[in-house]
Image (cartoon, chains in turn purple, red):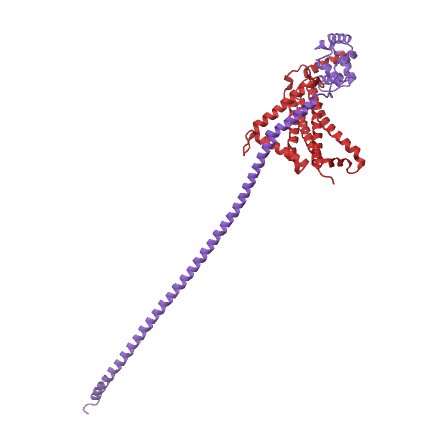
Amino acid sequence: MSSTVMASAPSFTSTSQQFLSRVAPSCPIRLPTVSVIARAAHENGGKPRLPSRLLKRLALSSRPAAIAAAAAMVAASPLPALAEQMEKAALFDFNLTLPAIAIEFLLLMVALDKIYFTPLGKFMDERDAAIRGKLSDVKDTSGEVKELEDQAAAVMKAARAEISAALNQMKKESSAELEQKLAEGRNRVEAELAEALQNLERQKEETIKALDSQIAALSDEIVKKVLPTV
Amino acid sequence: MNVIPCSIKTLKGLYDISGVEVGQHFYWQIGGLQVHAQVLITSWVVIAILLGSVILAVRNPQTIPTGGQNFFEYVLEFIRDLSKTQIGEEYGPWVPFIGTMFLFIFVSNWSGALLPWKIIQLPHGELAAPTNDINTTVALALLTSVAYFYAGLSKKGLGYFGKYIQPTPILLPINILEDFTKPLSLSFRLFGNILADELVVVVLVSLVPSVVPIPVMFLGLFTSGIQALIFATLAAAYIGESMEGHH
């Protein structure tokens, strides 16, 4: 690469020259110094030194061969000439690239809109709507469930009322029957009792009658026995 | 005098390794006009990545999204949310513009940091993020300007220009100046951030080739994402601003 430094052709490919022209075209010494400091600091275990001391050190420690080569380089192509030959950095180089990029961007926008933003957006919106619809459906069915529950409760209530009514009626019927049977039994018992009492009375009267007739006979006999031979 | 050749040698050694090239372009001639071929090539790659991944992911959308579709649905939600926040209820027609702006800048920035462009040697200049070139950022910024003018004019007709004397006619020069500072700040912010990020990484790599540049690279990825977000947000904010009613 060192040959390109000394070459006088207008177009350069040497990166260092381009960098010099870009970074420090007016003062090419500043940046090299910085990088030398950095490298020296790296060699010295990361401790930065004072620039002057460092530069002296570097100058002293450079190998003679390198110094000779560098001197030859400087002699062959002095620094001002070097700077002249360096290509201008074209940072603010406006040309057809600008409209080209603008058109590319617009085309990309149309293409992305056709295959990405509109279809996927529509798809997402539709899915959103479907989910919302399903959710509201679910809410509706919950109302239905409530209605059914109410119906079930009503049916249960009606059934319960019916059962209790039937129970009451049955209770009433059976109690009436019981009453009737009870009364019947009581009547029969009373009738039997009355009959028995009547029988008893009649027997008593019969007995009394029989006794009356026997009394006359007995009294005759008593009189005969007590009054012997009247 | 020993110092200068020595330091030049050092510098040469360092930059032969790193090969930093700024402001060097690979020119193509098109009908007497020049284009920066490296920018166009990388922008084609970016566009191909975007279109390819989108086609792959949402070619056949499923009700229950998986993998790529899920990711792109998330991105679309994000863009819609951003547009809605900045523009308001009428954000719908602007989603493609804001979304393409965000995706193009984001993928461009990250391609500069993640894709190994350096493998491909160009005769002159080098491949890098398309947003590394002022032409790209100015093109995007100018499109943003056109977009917000279009938004304002289509919403309010010529009454849109009434905003220049709001709230008082004294502010007319400043309001006009704003139309120039908006694209200027948009383009230079993006350009400067991406260029500076790539330069910092390259210079660090040349000084300390291992480990140390890695955090800076991650910082670069972060910055790239933030810049894409800022550009898209500001574009949406400008559009929303020109569409909102005056009070």
